[in-house]
Amino acid sequence: MAAAIEIGDTEGLAAISIRRIAAHLGARAMSLYTHIDRKEDLLDLMADEVISEILVADAELPADWREAITRITRLERQVLLRHPWLTEMIGFQRFSPGPNRLHHLEQCLKALDGLGLDGPSAIRVVGAVTHYMLGCVIREASDADLHRDRCGGHDEKLPYLLALTEGPEFPRLGPLLRAGSFVKPSPEQRFEQGLEWLLDGIEASVGKPGGLGGPAHRGRTTLDSSQTGTGDS
Amino acid sequence: MAAAIEIGDTEGLAAISIRRIAAHLGARAMSLYTHIDRKEDLLDLMADEVISEILVADAELPADWREAITRITRLERQVLLRHPWLTEMIGFQRFSPGPNRLHHLEQCLKALDGLGLDGPSAIRVVGAVTHYMLGCVIREASDADLHRDRCGGHDEKLPYLLALTEGPEFPRLGPLLRAGSFVKPSPEQRFEQGLEWLLDGIEASVGKPGGLGGPAHRGRTTLDSSQTGTGDS
DNA sequence: GCTCTCTTCCGTACGGTGTATCGGTATACG
DNA sequence: CGTATACCGATACACCGTACGGAAGAGAGC
Image (cartoon, rainbow over all chains, first blue to last red):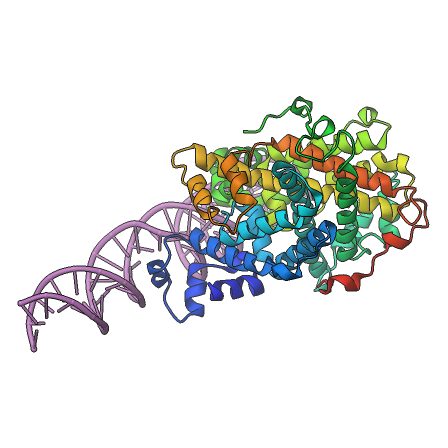
């Protein structure tokens, strides 16, 4: 597992192959199959192992819910950035919840204790924050790749984009790209600001009549799902 | 491209292979390489083709910024749910911005015209909303897989989770899981509610002193990146 | 010591992948 | 007519996950 995590950290998810791990261990490929059934199991174990890095010592968890959830989410982001293969795994294939992931979820709920929400509402809050964080990290990883492509060797992408957005069809995007301030805000800034927006909205919703609050929350909280058309499978 | 998109829609990203596409077309594998250089190029073309489905007719774009961005984001989510392989692609590998993706971005900026933001601020708003949507869709796809695993054939996951969360270490998560209300809220509800929170936060930030507003925005908008520790690579 | 069983290791092989190379054919043009 | 160009296709290579079956060693019972 350690060998596989090391390979993943340095060379990406695609480089994690049975033969590669075995070589790293001085063994042959098939030897690994005496310890695991399928490669998928190994990936699940790796994921849960790394997720343990997200766990905050309970003593260090701030009492204020906003600080607490911010700290956890920041840590989550950093761990995913440190192990990009985990990010790829989450988007690429389902990953089963292991013990550490459950502990992490429990800790998120604990962080929200101060809000006084009922269980399902707290789950929704955690979900929204996690979804935002996940999207951020995925985009950051993509941008890092794109940036690396541009800096290392051929920087064909930027002129291509500039040429594409030259016409009058891009009255907003074109000047922005040309001003060079497009990718300027650091990923941290974007992440932190969006997180603040989201938490602002959540905070405003708590205690608001018709918003999130006690065990009985209705009104805006319960949406008519017929709005969106597609039922979930 | 149409053949590849069809295969991806019905059998997932992993099933999109050169030989598979060629068979679908009644040709041999290597024949495809007279039209494309690498498989990656084909995937990029497929992605941009599908992204065109996200574009809203300009006449139908609501004047109110909130309605407009909500409509676009909802459509984005539905398209990603309709073509799960695109979601996988975004998380799994970088995908280069094609013309349609640029048009989409331009349209997002247009939707925010009513807010009166300067360019970089608008980009940040679009980014935050997109990140949230992306995280939602990815989690939805994972959950759909997990759900399908449980409903079709062996439902081993749920008892496993219940057993794991039985101890006193899970005072919040355990009862929630046992109450059966864990996955109850529909994906639409979760998506819509989180989006409202985020837009609430953004709306509150606009015009607030020190928040988002005119061309000159400072204060909370510009965060000290030293808070987060890790520099971006 | 001998045998029996069990765990671990590993060589081989199968069917899959992307694609480099090269040879063949059909069409268009001077 | 010759030739250039575009397309098709067969083969081959290196890689992947893994099914199968055999070899080597450890421990137990006699």
